[in-house]
Length: 277
Image (spheres, rainbow, N blue to C red):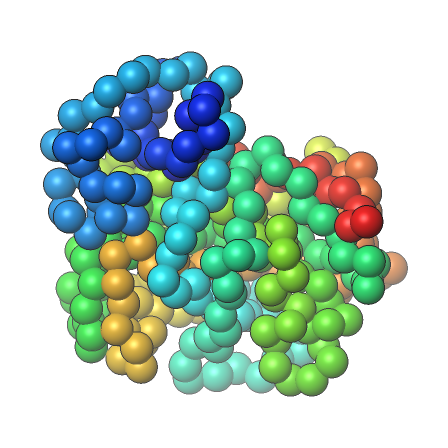
């Protein structure tokens, strides 16, 4: 099944189940208030809904607009580790994003007025369904509510001011997330599924998920060891090689560009670059 967060015609936020080109509004009085709460309740697939909308006509929100925590894994493909010159490590490199950096499929990524070094990073995002602490790798996959596309768009000069990534990873509008969440049952085996980015139609990144240095289960187990995971938490699992910063010359996203992240049947996330006023 696929689920989205979106705005009704009156501007109120809701969430729904996507079936073909129709969306069933699940944000009715008898149901949890939003998709995060519905995931936490544990009965998402059993919820009945209200009105039906045409998917093409709704204004999407980030698939989880209000996660408690967003974690990102750095250098989690060998191709990206090599192009950045990073040493091999025994543990995942983890940094955080803020929820107010997230935007939806179709919204504009704003290049900030303080930089022109705006880069793309295509990633698979995990959405946590069942929370926990010290989750074992054997149990980790059962804690996933679903998957979505993520673009960890990065303001590189701000990322590289120091060894701490967080400034360059948290400018407003730099976290495209969506368009929808695909449940594990529908996603199936993702090992051969490729993570692809296209800038103005040109393929920039293309690598299968089986090439992750730290697999999904290991990442979930590791993160849950230093902090409790909650339903609706998000883990962006890393980007393949081919980022703009490591090309010769560097390729930066500029106003008017279109960036796509496509991950098989997990979906295609498309955003246009605009300039911050």
